[in-house]
Length: 82
Image 1 (cartoon, rainbow, N blue to C red):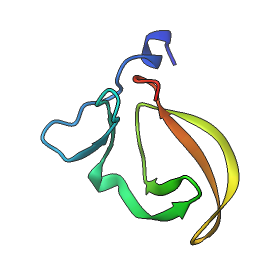
Image 2 (cartoon, rainbow, N blue to C red; image 1 turned 135 degrees about the horizontal axis):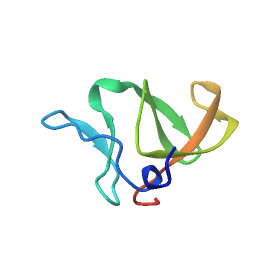
Image 3 (tube, helix red, strand yellow; image 1 turned 120 degrees about the horizontal axis):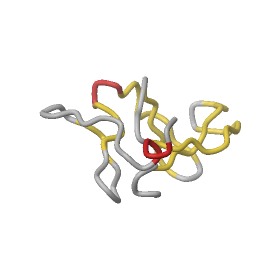
């Protein structure tokens, strides 16, 4: 990954419904990529996507969710740094 790719948006999806960063409005995923919103954990809701962009991935860990123990990672916007 080139240095400038770490701070620039990867893609923009014109005229399609998207999930976006609350801090900087960068596109995170198309709504079509959403698999499930049925995850709930200690810190609130969790979303499962087929694919997403413009994110930094935190450490993977096993967490107990209402649907069982799942391997998850927190994600952060790589543009807005949230």
